[in-house]
Figure 1 (cartoon, rainbow, N blue to C red):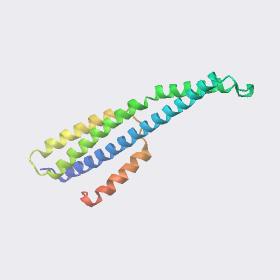
Figure 2: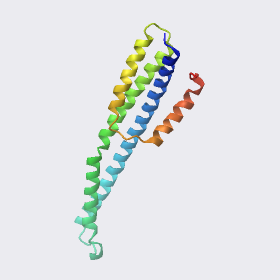
Figure 3: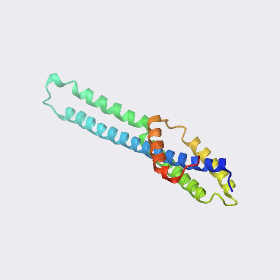
Figure 4: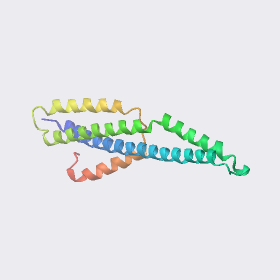
Length: 164
């Protein structure tokens, strides 16, 4: 059986895990969107560079287009390479999954907090939470996004009866 303070810890762990799961899903989506935009821009500017190279009737006043399109396409490719948006999107999706699973485990403990092994389960969940927190330190802390998901989760669980 868990004490009142431990029960509060389960509740906060549950909500915190759910908030982080939503945050990392949102972050993954942002990285995917960035990569999609960069890919389309690279396609657009490389197509423009190709067209200016194969077009022979380009007026002298537009001769600056050839190197400009090529340079912009190269810069976008470089941004795509160093940004590692696809890799970050996959890692954030993985963290979303892990935090979501942890949230479900906290929810299960909330339903069974009077069992004999509840304290041991709580300790295991707190250890998992610490490990997952360490996994996500390479990602930015976007306060506005985190607050958005905190507000969402707190409103969602308001009817669940938060401990005082």
